[in-house]
Length: 233
Image 1: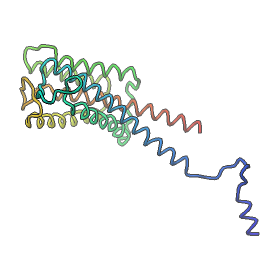
Image 2 (image 1 turned 90 degrees about the horizontal axis):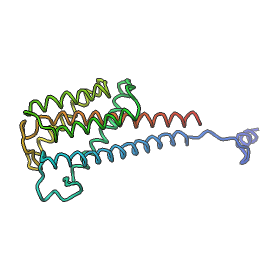
Image 3 (image 1 turned 120 degrees about the vertical axis):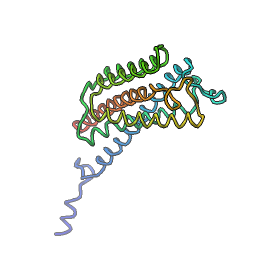
């Protein structure tokens, strides 16, 4: 009787029935890790590209000066600047949707690629203004860029978590830049605030908001893709 029970539980090769397996669960985890890596690589690439373009603007206007021996790579930028900006962009872009998930406050304001592209355009415009627009004094320039940066957040983000992360990361980035300038890695032509330009935190804040929006949009696309595959299965 026991033998017949064992035989009945075994499925013949051609029966078409499947036995329970952990394969789909492992596949989902693998897909999530793969998608996380893809998002990180895309954010890194975007950060590198923006760093090259924006740093070119700064160097052309002599806002930043690198020693002659390190100006030997593409777009006259120190070799370490684009990778550092790319790494920071990937971390910020992955951190924003993670914080939204932890707080239980999914960001739903203007969640479309056209809005993200406009945000990138405004960010580039703010950088362009800092390098090429002449103001009467540095205080006026700093206040103008601060207003533009906060306007960028209000127009494309409006989340408390986004504003808080933007301020914290901008302050940390400013402190890191001050340490680099203090150690002679590079310098600003007309520093007016502790070895750097007073408007630099505004640029960092706008950059954080921009990369956060890109990261959120990539995470939203991944979520929709995974949901579609789940419904199909």
